[in-house]
Image (tube, rainbow, N blue to C red; front, side, top):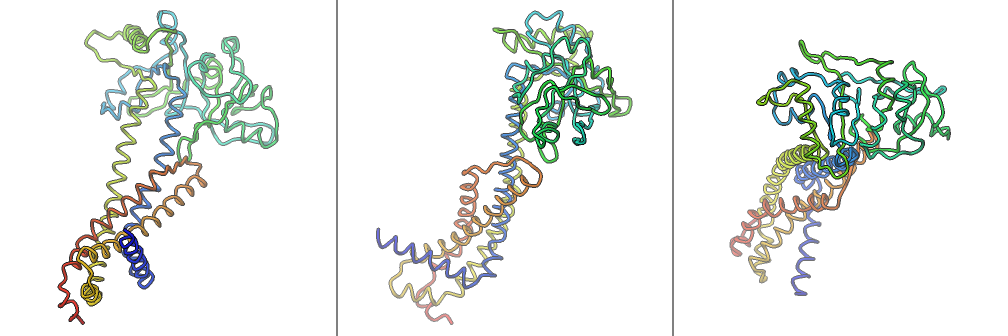
Length: 431
């Protein structure tokens, strides 16, 4: 055992000596490995960070919240035809009132107007001489907070009286708070701000949520009563296709305590189908989705994205592996006499094989370490510049090193076997 450990140390030292002697050649050899590992680590950090952020965002919906919409992104993922989706009727506030009056299994029914996407309203928020970038304004009932898990930084949500009397009250997302009030150390609750051209009293402030992506932050919103939203902004229908308009209306409901989500969805489906005059064999002309449905959809998307990343990175790793094979083959030719001397002094074939295979692995591992460093730097650089969430789990580093070592073993095997099979006498005669 001590002999084998000493041999391993000598072989690794020889491998690094070869790297130092041929810096340019070694660098060009592992370039493909560096590019492949950089892309794996860099993209994994961003995909992982976005995955954690989005999951946290979805989980804030509440596990038993049911979202009812005209159509959503899940329809396109499931292959539904866009032309058929456009034929669906727009949801209305009357639909929400019908659910509230007719449903016996629902605890809360909330209307959300303009919550992002086509037809949403974006306005700057002003306080004294400070202003925000354009952020989303959407209107809800007082029950919005019951269906979400968004933490409060201070204040409260508006109440039913303020909704009924169309009061100009607003709950700020964390972006508006950080831009308008945090720098000057002022408590925003009770202060008057201007949303677009209308003055609103701040009654509450949300805490920070997760970032949603490059240039998009989940905190870029303010919430006002839906009655005030209708009075000020109206329900803007946006032309999204020929003879098709989209009105941003969404309904969210929650079942009563002890009622399953499935039972509540069945009751909602019955009431909505009756309101829309659907026959028994007609498909639903609306969507119903839960937190689990969104998470399952994201699982499909993230798995496909990660698979595509591995495939693309594997191409770079394969190119790098071919380069390693070519250079190691040249190295075997250059060091034929050295191999003959080692064999003449008693070195066995497996020891020569082990030497050249170790050199190939060391070469690719150096490329793997450089790729991990560059990939990590790219991930943190993107986070610093754009605020995009990143996560660098230890398994991503292990994955990078494992890939690079595997490339060295696979593509270094042929040159190593060739070196081990050289005839000692012929090798000694080589000039």
